[in-house]
Length: 188
Image (cartoon, rainbow, N blue to C red; front, side, top):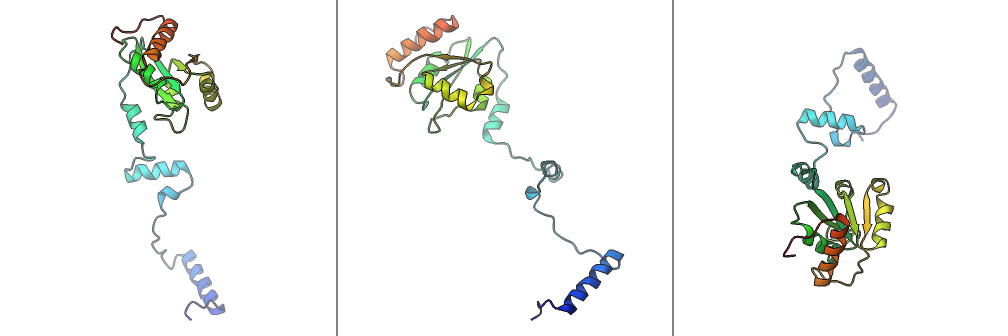
């Protein structure tokens, strides 16, 4: 019963503490706390810098965003949005991707989309083409402040087409082309 904490043990502990405070006993080495568990972000960043560690770790998406080439300011950035980024918005991207005046992306509003729309996409885009009014409403609900000064156009294209359906391609060329006052490249 060496762990029995009785009166004698408490007195010895008290005397030991008193000696430590007077400087008669050197403080024992205590290992550093896990620096990632410290509460203040500034302390975490300072300690990570001391250890030579990148903190917080950079995600692949952030790394790709930093490494993206600087784009020509004369090029319009177009974002096509549908529900699952499966048929309509990828078709729009495919139709307009090789146009010299445009830089094009596509995304979906659903969490199950092949590529879900995010803050970076909204910030990146100059013009956002949504396939239906429900997509515009969903974007406004999720990215309210980011969309204050964004140009959002509803194309009113129902979910009745497959990827690169000839009717869908024609609709994309006419509606997007007329809005942007440009003609699609020949061969699309």
